[in-house]
Image 1 (tube, rainbow, N blue to C red):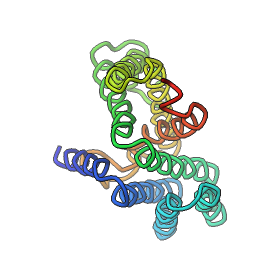
Image 2 (cartoon, rainbow, N blue to C red; image 1 turned 180 degrees about the horizontal axis):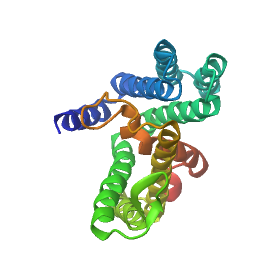
Image 3 (cartoon, rainbow, N blue to C red; image 1 turned 180 degrees about the vertical axis):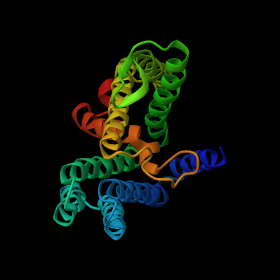
Image 4 (cartoon, one colour; image 1 turned 90 degrees about the horizontal axis):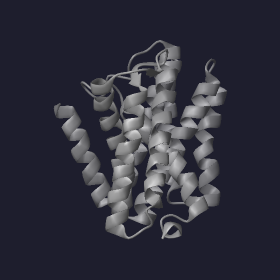
Length: 250
C-alpha cells in the first residue's frame, strides 16, 4: 500500500514539474524496465541486464534533447546492442526494448509539447482502463479474454475498461473544447494499453515468471506497473503525428 502511494505521488510530482525532472524520471523508468526484461529472458547474466538497462536509460534521456532525425537511431541503438550480446530470446528483447524506449520518448514529448493536462489525460485513460477493468471483471465475471495468458482477465472487464476510458475522454473533451472524437481516441488508447498489458503477460508466461521483479513491494516490478503505458504511449505517439493532435480534433 505504502509503495503504491509513493509511486503515485512521485508520478504526479514528475508530471507536474515537467522538464528535466520528468525526462530523468522517464529515463530511469525505461532503464529499469529494460533491466527487468533482460533479467527475465537471460537470468544467468545479471551484469548484462545492468549494462543494457543503463544504456537504454541514457539513450532515452539523450534522445529527447536531440532533433528527431538524430534521436531515432539513438533509440534503436540499445536494441542492436542487446542483439549482439544476448544468446537467447533476442526477438523478445528487441521488440520490448523498442516498445519501452519509444513509449518513454512518446511520454516525454506529450508532456513537453502538449503540456500537463494532456499528459494527465493519457495517464488517466490507462489508469481508469486498468482499475475499472479489474473491478468490473471481478463483479461481473463471465467469459475469459485469454485464459492461457491472463487467467483473471474477462471480456466484461476488458469492455468496461473501454467504457471508463470513453468517459475520461468525454470529460476532457467537455473541459478543453476539443471534438467529442476524443472519446473514440480515448477508447483506442485504452485498447492499446490493454495490448501492452497482454503482451507483457504473454512474455512472462512464456518465460515462466510471475512478476518482472520484486522492485516495488507488493506490486511486482516496474514493467508490471507500466506495461499498459507502453502500448498506450507508443500508439498515441504514432496517432498524434497523423492527426496533429489535439488541434486536428477541433
